[in-house]
Amino acid sequence: MTRRHRPSFVQRTLKMLTLGTLLGSATLAMAQGKVYVSSEKDNKLYVFSAQGERLSAIDVCKRPRHMMFSAHRSQLYVVCGDSNQLAVVDTASGKMIGTVPLGDSPEIFDLSPDGKTVYVSIEDENVMAAYDLATKKALFEVKTGGEPEGVLVTPDGRFAYVTSEVANVVHVIDLGQRKVVKNIKVGKRPRRFVLAANGAELWVTNELDATVSVVDTKDHSVKGTVKFAVKGMREADITPVGMTLSPDGKTMWVGLGRANHVAEVDVATRAVGRQVLVGKRAWGLTMHPDGKTLYVTNGLSDDMTLVDTASAKAVKTVAVGRVPHSVLVAP
Image (tube, rainbow, N blue to C red; front, side, top):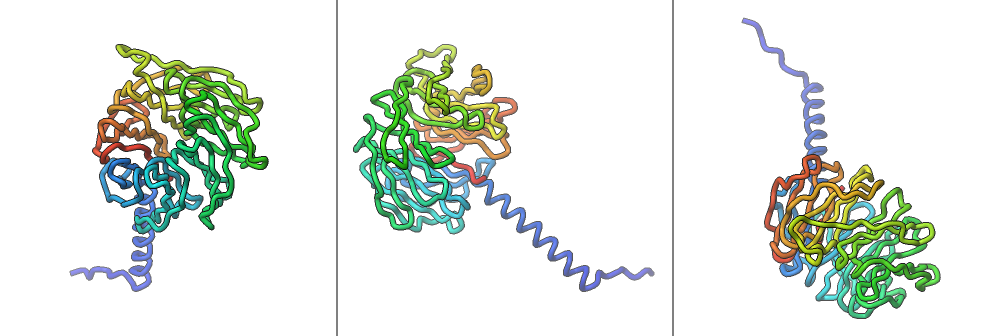
């Protein structure tokens, strides 16, 4: 009878260390795959796996809207429109650990490149306001047109772009001078921004025009327009708001709002491609870092649709609380 070979202590230790490393890597991969959705009426952030399985809920301030991660993803920031605050959430513990006081009805925000300053559109005061995240103090305000919403800070930190829904313009704000240096006329009721073409283009959704304006970031002129149409729907029902860019920079996905679809646009040619039926009032969009899954929040059906980008088909819809606003994926 042959004796079984027993692994040595060193072999057993190495096996345990290897197993621990693999488990640690798996845990990290799971954490990086988390999907966060802000629910305006529930005052919560709902946390899902990348596959759409609900994991937990985080209590935050009132009417959470737009979200962003801190530079190292250890914290998540979310604007709360009814409590006039920026909530700070610790991503490890899944708890709100602080707030920053803001102006009346904050909407969208962006961070300075060094992560120290937050720039917020304050809808009821018609300003873009800057706040120091460390001291929680207001730094300055810049007057805008009526109902400012979208905010995007340039990668070099010199300028901020801000949409005015009432004035139908994009304000170019010099952050050093703290003033508007140019107004770019775009479509009706401009809402959100995405930088494309390696930063050479600024894409702007125009909710009441069924269009996206493409702005040249060098001279701040409108260089093109993308027009949307959905078979069987009136133009008035096509209300683009949210956008997200594919990881390779070749495709822009646009939420068409009350048209209940998302549309695929070729960035180079600006040709509208495939359209996918999702939930009601598709506004919030983001893409998984691998580019394979598009996440869409549907504000009037209280759910989130997962779209397979290769086939351009909706593969799953999950409930996400009342009036989901934004969706964010841990990269």
